[in-house]
Structures are given as C-alpha cells and as structure tokens.
Amino acid sequence: MYIQGGAGLRQVVAPNLRAWSGGADGWQREMPMHGGFGEPVAPIPPCIPTPPWLTLFKHYVVAKEPRIASHSPFRGGWETTAAVSPLKPVTLNPGYIHPTTGALQLDPNLDPKLKALMGNLFAGRPPFDKDPYKRFVSNGGKIRVALVDLSTDKKSLFPTIAEYNSSTMSYAASLAKIGALYGAYQLKFDLNAEAKKNPTAMTAARVGALKKMFDVTRVGSPPTLVFDFNNTLLRPMNEICENSAAAQVIMAIGFRYLASALWQSGLYDCRRGGIWLGSSYGGSAWNRDPIANQSAAVNALSVATYFTLLAQGRLINAGSSRSIKMHLVAQRAFCRSFFEEGLRAVKQFTNDDYMYSKIGIYETFYHEGALIHHCRTGKKYVAAVLTEAGAGFGADILSSLIAHLDSLVRTNP
Image 1 (cartoon, one colour):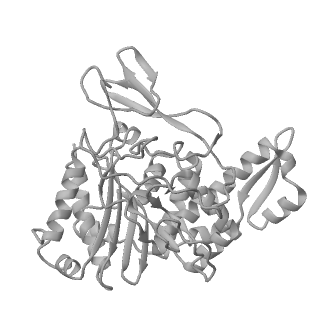
Image 2 (tube, rainbow, N blue to C red):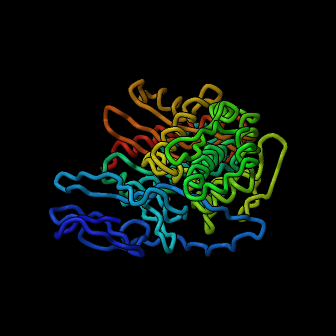
Image 3 (cartoon, rainbow, N blue to C red):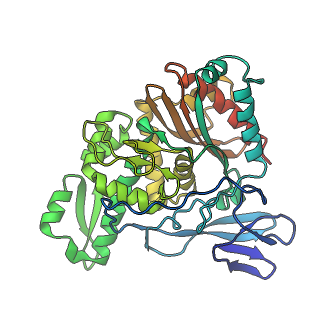
C-alpha cells in the first residue's frame, strides 16, 4: 500500500495499515484494524480448514494498489502493480479488512450512527414506531447491514465500513447469483492468462469443449488464443435474475470452479463465510457452504465487499468490473430493485443517479445489495441489507430502510 508522508510517496506493508488523520502532514500514525479508532470489534473466528472436497484451481487477477498523487487537495487513484497476479484474498481486499487478522476497520462516524439506527428500529423508536417496522419486529425479524461510503477519492482508496451483524450468514436466495457473474469472468480471465503463460495446455479437445461457451480466436505473433463469451453464455448472464438463466451459467462454469474462485478471492472467507453457490437454481446441487450449511449463502459483509470491488474496478480487473456492472443493469429487466423504488418514493433518487443492484427473495428472506451513486452530490456508497421476517413485507422493509441508510451517507463527513 502506498502512503503519502513527509518524504513523499512510499510503500507500507501489512500487518499495520495507516489511517488518514488529515492535516498538512497527511498520513501521520499507524493504527491496527480495530472497530473504529481504537474500539475493538467482536472476536474474529479462526479460519476453518480447507474442505477436502474443495479443489483449488489456479486463478489470476490484475492486482492494484492505492496511489496518492498529492494530498493538498487529496488526489489518488489505483496503480496496477502487475499485469497478472495469482488470486489471493489479500489481492482483492477491499481495504477495510485487515490482511492478517481479518479485523474490520469501522467508519468512525457512520458505524455508530448505523448501530444507533438499528437500535431505534428494534426498540420501536421514531421513525420506526409504525409499520412495516413494528410488524417486522413483532414477527421476530432479523436484519444484517453493511454500508461503505465511497464518496471521495480518499474513501474509495482507503474505505472503512459501517455494519450491523454483517458477518452473520444467511440463506442467499437469488442474491448469491452475483457469485456466478464473478465466476464467469474469472474463468474467462484465467483462460486468457493460461493461453499466454502455457499455450500447450490449450489442446484441441479442450478448446473444442470451451467453444460451447466462448468464441475462440488467434491474435498476435506468435498467435495466442483469445477467449470471449459467446451468446450461449452472454444471454443468460444478462438474464441472471431468472433461475433458468442462472442455472445455465452455473452449470457451464461448474460448482467446483465457482467454489475455488469464491474461496480464493475471499468473497467466501474462511473465517466468516460469504458468497456461496452450492445450488444451480435449476435442480442440480453440490456441497453446501462449509460454515453455515446453506445451499446458497451470503452475508452482508461479503455482498458489500463484492460491490466495493466493483466500484474500485478491482473485481478481477477494470474491464471485468465494468462488464459485470452492465450485466447487473441488464438483469433489471427481469428483477426489481427495492432500493431504487424506495429512494424514488422519497425523491432521493433521480434519473441523473445510477445504481447497480441485485435482489434475493425466497419465502421469508428478502435481500438486496447495491452500488449507488448520486451524481449531483457526488455521494457514492455500497449498501447490503439482508432480512428475514414474515412473508409479504420484507420488500417494504428494504424499500423504506434504504432511505434512512441513504440519509446517513448524505450527512457523513
């Protein structure tokens, strides 16, 4: 990680990351990744062993690190540190997870406000002293939230997180389908990386099988195979909200490959769990997630990490991140967004704003994760809300709660 100090730009290595303290001296002090500035978070569970049935394939990404051009005013961006790097959880760390301990760096302003908001909800205090919140609480409703403010260069490069039960696992419903979009682009990137590094591995039989999903061409001198999705896979990725389309994508990529990529990316974390696909949404099933024993699983933290990496252009590489966003836009022709509906209802979302989102619904489970950008104000944030309550009013909780979360970010310094 690159840090601006009195002597200019220099690299700082984990385990300690630095917290921006403002002022003319810029990065002034090292801080361990506690909850907020010195406030400890709940104990972090140890890593579970890699399950014996989990095959770990080789995966690759374009690694990026924060680069600070100046700090008065702050200017920064992402610096590509290598053309292709092996995939490891630390490589796709969104910035708020300690690379060694796994502790979260909590937003010192946003996190206490979010926890206070949730406290008011379950205590029935205003503005939560009416339905659907009263009915949600009386029915034993459960909620998990993660919120990441990315409104400035500084926050995008060195994000912190606000959370409420964000590491608690939940049945994912369709929200875990975001893992299938990631897995498809990870496979494409891996194939293109392998074709360059080890062209002899691309046998005629293997390439012939891959042509069911990819257009394969030869470019350059000496010629190198290049893999691009064909319509057999592009169409269902644009319709990923539909179970039949999701099944087509998942079965084409394969459960083993998806599990390997999710595990090694950290989107499924060995300590807390995360995004898991052990179901095809079409009748086929594989191993359940090894922590929560769900066929399709998520927690709010993993969903927030996914959308934060998309915002940073770091989910595999910048091109893959852009394409995944476009699939999330396309699938909205088949799925609604409770977040957008709720924000539009209170005039906190206009046609100048944009949102990349995915919902998940099954019986009592109502979830949504999103990257939201208010273009006029510059406020940009990731929100992940997972709920479990009586059937029929989870949508009302999501569409009304997002307005309160949006207001927290709007007033966040």
